[in-house]
Image (cartoon, rainbow, N blue to C red; front, side, top):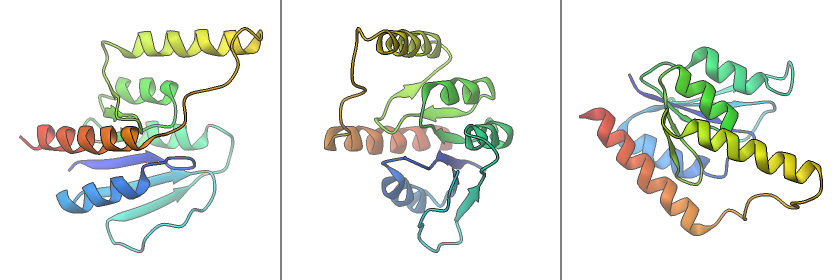
Length: 148
């Protein structure tokens, strides 16, 4: 059965995910390093891990299957989940695949190096309504595709 696993500490699309999951009767697992407020629903589960900074990522990777959808907070987690054959969609609505994760990781690493040496400052653009809309559309499409 398909589940949605969320790297939940800073995920900006939790509420949107709940709405879509409820419509399709999917279970959602939120994994975080600290307790967060979530609705009281039987199909929502919260896992709190705080052993080390990457504990949430590690839990998600260890517990994901090829039937799951993962919403990662970062590209390295997306890559690790793709290795487990999970479907991966970013909070901005980008659907990661085996064909493009290498390029995404390379670009991320390059940007990180440029920031470290001071050539590039700042991070990603602020999260927008368009990002939220893209995410909702792509998540809905992905679930429909998986159910066929």
